[in-house]
Image (cartoon, rainbow, N blue to C red; front, side, top):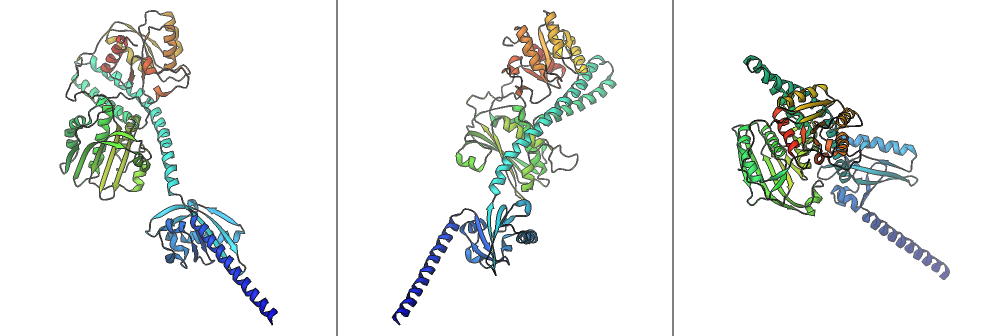
Length: 537
């Protein structure tokens, strides 16, 4: 009896030991599951939840007692449940040990608060004979998607900007021809008022095209910019009347400006265009009226702010905000807001270039822009521009300007592959008293410079369809004639950024400034005179 009893006691003791070890293993397994950052969920064949780790609780926002025993369908948006069921059926029949699925397979999570998120899952199965379990490891990829979009968006903007620049270059050449010959004809038929009237209509249409091209160029961050120290409050004050006249009487325009505002260094024309564009967008968002507020303030952005706004950098900034109490925007609209040609306005009511121009200006200025919007509650655009450690000039101070275009008698070599633009430049410059020579490409220009010692200025288009573009032509001409004056012209936004030939010189320093196409008679006259009189050129 004792031996039997002893054996029984030993068996019972062994059973207790097995159970204890199993409990310890289960506890250890549960601890490992809860350490894992991903959501780990186990279900039976019917899809009922058996295990729900801490990562799953944090991801979906439930308590454990709210999900155990419930169908996994509660974690899937209703429109994706059939697709999920089909995926699991296919996986079960495939014989695979595990399978990875993502958003493209309809893997969208549904939190307790009904918000949705993109996810990636790895599903595996465990066959226990009569019972089969499924194990799902799920990861919320919202942050990764946002990071991918932040990386992809600048690349997309850059590609679109390069396309816009190329189109603008050709379009500016066309506009330059129209504008040039229109001005020339106008000066020669002043005795015929009726013809002058028609030409005025052509000139106005050309200027509208030039303004549109300017906006197109502003959609890229590579356009050369003429910056100057600017007192923002005084600058906005000069625009307030124009903005007030541009909105409906039902809209109240308010200024909220901080005192002792720091100066910024920006292209003032671009800043004005940006504020007017934002104000007009605000007007369109308030058809029934509301409040348009322009605000300025000094802001010191820290690392915490940068963490929440990846396009931002830490430092001292001047913040300019344009707010409205209008209709607001959806997240889908906000995502595409700064893309060139994107517009929510009807056909013929918007070019889709205004906000991309704002984006390009802010990027060029070394700042960033943030957008806050809520449907039915309005929108706020906040532009952050770096503080400039220079004194801004008095906004009231005017500048002396010559009324009559300056003239001269020097010899100018004009280089352009567009024959009509060559003729326009010749007619303009000869009417100002200059002597002119022409070349259709860089090689011809260098040959002429070799044979003629009396040339005072090289007036050269930057973009020409050959290896010897305007930039290289100017550099080679300077090597032969170090005292030669140079003025570069172009209608392409990125011409001064190209260093493909490796000369290591900035053409804007090589030349006596630059002249953008299309130019008019007065702009050409002043640019040429400045280039000829510039001792540093």
